Length: 216
Image 1 (cartoon, rainbow, N blue to C red):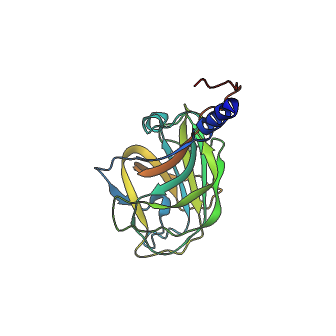
Image 2 (image 1 turned 180 degrees about the vertical axis):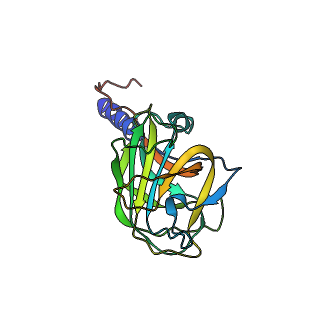
Image 3 (image 1 turned 90 degrees about the horizontal axis):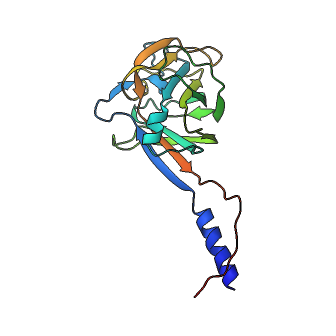
């Protein structure tokens, strides 16, 4: 009986070792509004989105992520919503040593959100986020590289009251292009989207367990 109780305690420790955390990367005090990853501006004839941005390993570590943390969801802070769907909205992620978007990033990328329509939602408070971008495939961070987020969408209907999301100053923080997925984004901006990441931190699986008696 005592051995069985010991086994249950071990299982309880193991299965509760996973914890889900939500963090924000972005300077909340210096926000601006830009189309960026959700752009569909009719005035600029933006009917495709081709977008890349990076977040550094130092930022991820400061947010509490460790090696093998799994990113399950991302969210942008939507400041204006056109209520029109962005078609085939696809998100890919990958590891990179680049700290900015001086050049387009051509690293091996993994599709984490399969192509599907996405309609940005404007929340009533700047303290809340559009949390509808759940990832179909979790992204596992290696613990030391920066990460690139690569987005493409289209063709999209444009709007005279286009989508916009919160960004903050960051040198060469993102690239954007009005082009299909097969092309790299060509325009560089000295901003970067504020982003909310939800991740799971998983403890290393024990390699051996011993069942002993509990002394009472």
